[in-house]
Image (cartoon, rainbow, N blue to C red; front, top):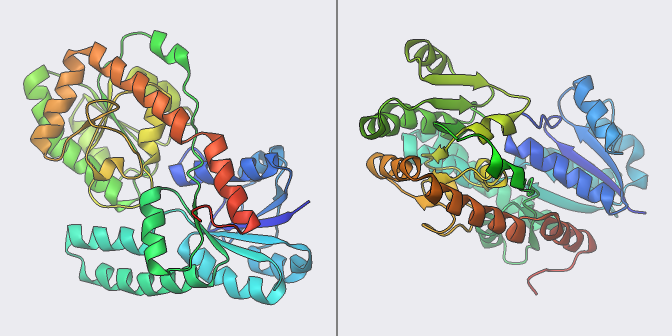
Length: 366
């Protein structure tokens, strides 16, 4: 039995963001493959989350990742460190405490690329400087790691470009089960946005949706409810909801699926970012049609007009959304094909193959 330590910056809060849901999926896949898996966090533990992981058969490392590894490292075969700052902190500890262990860098998104694209979008020069620093750090980490996990083929290509000898494997690890009963619910109504709102790209997308896209939709369709789902909504958004009765800001929801079953369209006017957009895949699983920008579909091999409707400008996003609102049959057809894509390209079997390749040290692209 292989003993693994998986480290992230904080315990995974599944209801809050797609990255946390992915982490739980990775832990589950590793445990299902028969590995002895322990999870460690650089930040403190909420007891509820610890109970959830224990329920999956995952061990809990306390008091902290570095101290635990220094004390118990002799018995560890593999260390998986998720996110650039965590991997930077854990690499020297792992090499010192368990030098024979395999070190895997789990790039939940390409850190330097996400910062670079946001800096370019906002004109933030300090963020641009941080992106350049991160690129150098990520290049060194990719070169030093025994294997690297990416969440999409696009991210994998970016990481391979940093170091020609890198062994990079794609592990999206998302919820990929579509429930056919979603198609039998009451008529869907309104538009929805889903995303952790402390992420700058998501906040910018919501502002664009409210100020540019939504008004054009209402001009064509009349009053159309808009629901924004996501933890840590900013003050300006909460204020907007008090002034606009058709705008609902839910904050974090324990049951996101119920809200996605009620909506007619997920609209994703995203610019920038990196990684795979799990909000889109979550919509696919709930048979909810999607209208999105190219950046909103990053990491998702969806075909415009077949799985989703792709649009770039506010006017185009509004027009695509209106076409689905006016023709629910179009939305249903898109959603059915998108659910098929989800099962084909993002199943547990696909992610499990990537994890197994990283653990055994073979290059899946050889």
